[in-house]
Length: 348
Image 1 (cartoon, rainbow, N blue to C red):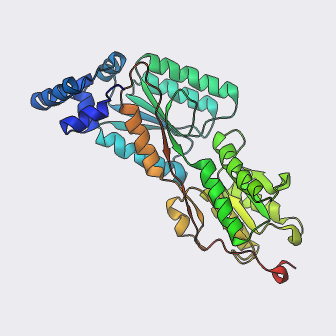
Image 2 (image 1 turned 90 degrees about the horizontal axis):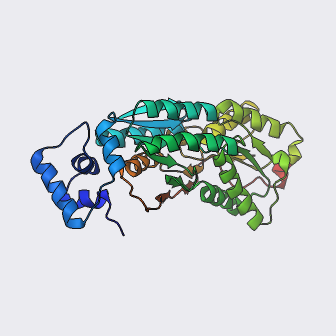
Image 3 (image 1 turned 135 degrees about the vertical axis):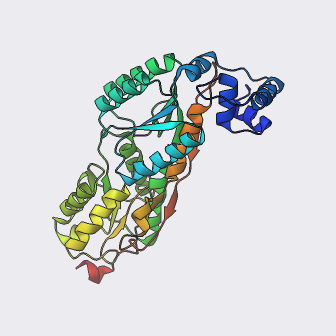
């Protein structure tokens, strides 16, 4: 197996960023003694540097580009924080591009970052389900990589990219099983827009767990909405517009921001949470524990997703190496917004 730059850095007792600057060259330099130490470790381990990476490192600006849907969304803000921390640690400045989940804006963002000669691009928004949108994004990234640029993604954007993979499907399945264990059998799901792969992944996890328990989920119980508070509130409002006897006992809002909107609408209508309806979210953004009632959710290591993606992008790949697929675990966190379903008297 080929020796990686990370192994060289560990052998020399320096950071990955310092090893990269010493071996590949860059706009920032290291001292002669330290550079000699790193090169000695590279020689001892048999490390072979990547020529395109060296060329880009010498020509590129000291920037890392990150494309995400909306930095005002707490989910993406936490990922951006992880990207920023890792970039600064490596002596680089992050450039953030908001795409609003629009594939054309994403392609324009990639082209702009390419023109700015950023050292690496982190694709932190969800992949799109539209094949044409995927092809356009792949083409823009291929042009960037042909100039020696490095790409890493948060979530799965295809097998050709280094990726940090959050446990979307597994986390949704485990959360659903936790609610099944509480006794719930009537579920509704507020999930994201159908154009985003993350929505499909999380919904598949829910369906997998329900099918394993022999519990059905009809079409009217699934609400595809944008990831926003207003959309979450509107979705739960539609679920409650039917007869009370058909209300779900558990609402799975597959993003915390939608779950908070759902909680607000249930409170406005005087529906007790969790006494009448349990509500759960997904992501465990910083405010999830502070709303009332505190939100049950799936905890993703959001900042770690961003920082790990930067480290992957800065690790120079060599011909023949397969892309790295780093999976980070999700964990169910049960709080006050979920409880066993109401008894027969409460459902009258």
